[in-house]
Amino acid sequence: MTNEADKLKEKVLEAQNDADIAALYVLERDANEYFDETTLNAFYQNILDLALERLTTTLEAHIRMDMQEVNDFATVRALYEYAVENYHAGSNKDAAALFEVLSGLTNDSKFSTALKVHWFSAAEDISLDDFISKIADVNATQNAGTFYISEFTKEAQKLLDKAQTTEDNG
Image (cartoon, rainbow, N blue to C red; front, side):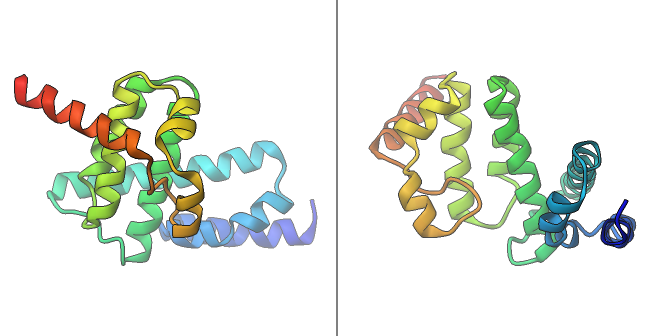
């Protein structure tokens, strides 16, 4: 193992001990460069574990995460990535549940609205590929510079309207 990888492992361990998800994301590029696949998978699993702990604490405290606070932001990012992984794996029901929780987790109304589109898409069993190609506006999202899909086509409004109609009739 290289000296650089050893130094990186020390930094990762310190960030994990401090439960500092943001610091782990800062180390992500180096982790991708220096860690083997097994170590890299453990690195990402640690980020997810810390994010799930913070999620539990937040839900138990009945508070919302502040997207201006760096570790709240990093936590939300980790949970979003986990939800998208579930969606990509075809676990639409699990992804929908995660998107639902995320839609109410923060103080950011734009994020909340965007995650409702994700939630309703997964709940309607729309595949991730169809979501990306028909509902998401990937170019506008890239221009917006968000870590999550934040811009959508007109199909998204139809989906939201359908969900609202279903809720009104249910």
